[in-house]
Length: 149
Image 1 (spheres, one colour):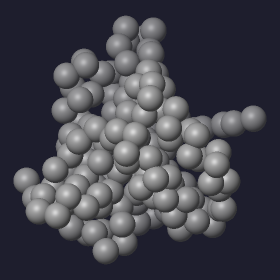
Image 2: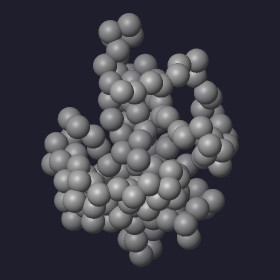
Image 3: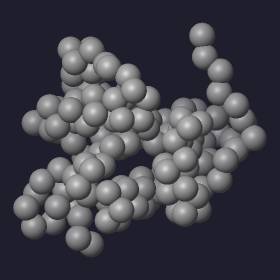
Image 4: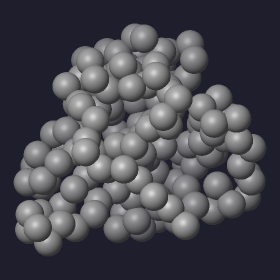
């Protein structure tokens, strides 16, 4: 494995915050509030019942190349959790080099070890590049639509 996958700690907060600000700008042309994102990332790192951040680091330099956030949702239908991949970001210089694939495979192992009913994610309808990546890893679109208020 050329990347080291590990769980984020508080020292990784600023890197993850910057990744989230960059991801929102790149994928949705959104400008997020730095303080809000920082507090949200910090809250999740301090309380893994909220979420877990996984980091992909260069195996030689230790540079953080990408991250993803994992959350869970309980399914009474399945008597098991659904694992959700969220907040995915890979540095532009590290894209198409297998960084996301290794994060994804690590998340898959976690979900399987917890007997998850499924590993899910949502993606912007217009982000066809990401959709192709997810499909190449065996994911498929579901029959659910997402609504929000």
